[in-house]
Amino acid sequence: VDINGKTVEDQSDNGDDTDGNTTDDNTNVNVDMIPNPPPPPPLFADIKVTKEAFMTDNGDGKPSANDIIDYTITVTNTGEVALTNVTLTDMLTDGNDVSLDLTIEPTFDSATLGSAEGELKVSETARYYASYTLKQNDINTAAVKNVVEARAFGANNEVVSDISDNGIDDDGNTEDDPTIIDLDPVSSISLIKEALFIDENNDGYASVGETIEYRFSVTNTGDVDLFNVEIVDKLEGVE
Image (cartoon, rainbow, N blue to C red; front, side, top):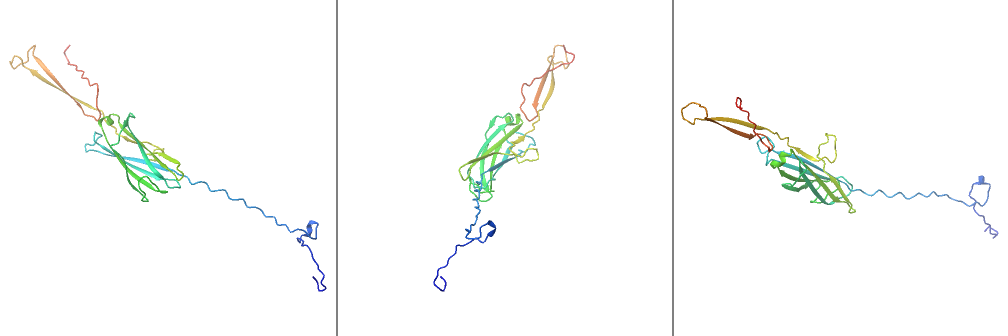
């Protein structure tokens, strides 16, 4: 309204006269929509198990019955979520792949971040111990082989598992090597032959028809059982 009471009005222009329209342009603002970022990938669960073996000799300096193999098992949470219901399944065999039973089953010792048995926080490692006492038949097969499988549940109840490695990475294989104790037994035998003259006529001399008795002592001087032992005797000068 001016001083004379007359109403004046105008519709806005956008101020851009290069578009061919110098009056009353709508003022438009182009807004680029920013897309929503993709959701982050889900956190993953993972587990790693290693089994190492150490043999304690019974004092005779060779593989023999009652030597003890001690096993140390480490289970690590290598994923991004906590794990629960951690379990171990152990598989022990001799050198001929015949199943054996551990003398002491895997027994929980401790966890690096203080978790109880069966639970693992992220990056936490739990340690278990087990042992096996050698029997003569194990030595006969020249080796004791062992693997253990670790299984657990992740945050969404997904199952994760791993087969143990032996902890030796300079053998060209860094994953899932069985833990093998090579017993390297020695096979050997000893034979002693003794002769005893029987002076049957008691004349103090060897006479035709008198007897010589031979005694053989055969000893297994090795580490393994021997079978089909034979003595082949050749008496020189006797047909």
